[in-house]
Length: 216
Image 1 (tube, rainbow, N blue to C red):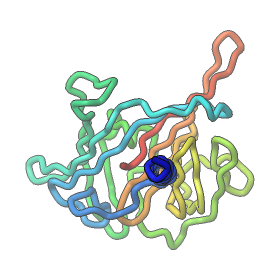
Image 2 (cartoon, rainbow, N blue to C red):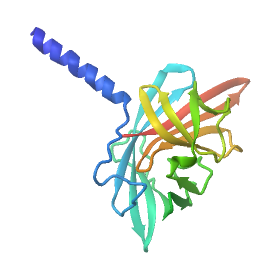
Image 3 (cartoon, helix red, strand yellow):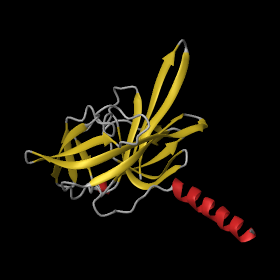
């Protein structure tokens, strides 16, 4: 009996430890940013929280599927929710046109995207040679002690929200004209995290809501 209890305790500990680490394995058939091919699929689980309230972090029960599709000879990143998603939107699908270029990906028509909706640049650069060091401070990322917004490309050693931790990744942000601090974390092969902090005020009370998608 003691052995069974011990095995169960170890299993729970290992599961909790693994949950914090994003799946960084480049699995066969997953969306590969350096070599996009029709039929590649990656999956992301939704999460939400409130800045400064760690106990409010939770997974939404939604799974976002990202798939490379060929439409009349052009490549698109299609996004849709899995049939088992808790808050599944009826027939939701987003198509973002993509074109591979030297050390990057150019994409357009992403306004309906759940993953790229706040990203302001037309290009996702894959070469991090020009990336500058950035660091997380509470719910935001800073560059030279200022909130990171704009078209700068960064490298961050660690980013954490709830039980999610991403290490040593390229990071890009949103355009500075909208009221959101949003980040994409990725490397030369895969997208790992979409993160957005929305600030709003109602009747004099400010709210800082976090939403995002984590690679699974």
